[in-house]
Image (tube, rainbow, N blue to C red; front, side, top):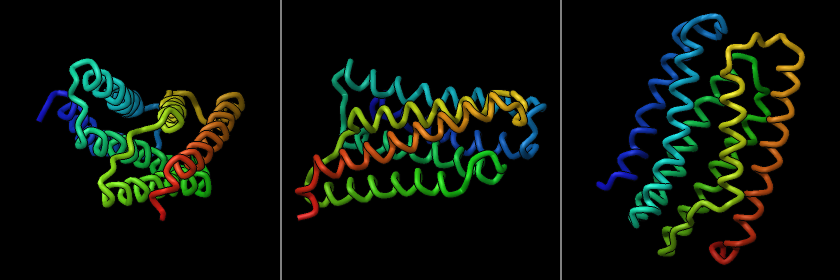
Length: 181
């Protein structure tokens, strides 16, 4: 197992730690847990950039990395989005749309694998991940949730994230339409 793949696995192992810390004192914005949640999620998000950088720089791009890196991102982001839905911070319909897009792309990747292909992350998919992680980190900032400006920014980030997510799914489909034939 090479270093970039180990970094991806670290991200996967950080997910249960993030979830556990976030729910230790459910939805309390005043506790130290929100800071620790923010640190854990941010560190996990940073490992996404690190593993990709290392893989390219060291010439260690592998099929494992191409498949597991996006999966690790999906698990991390989906976990946070589900927690925020349970906390009443994000609407369930939006989270369902975002997670459905993730399942769709994972299914597309599986179809590709069955045909001997590996779909690497596209620039649209990477942009989607950046917006999702920005939204999540912003929500984790220990601001009170009843501040109007904070809530407005959450909605703006959510709408941008939704639009980028849908457009990237369309782009993946368009570029890989042959997989369906």
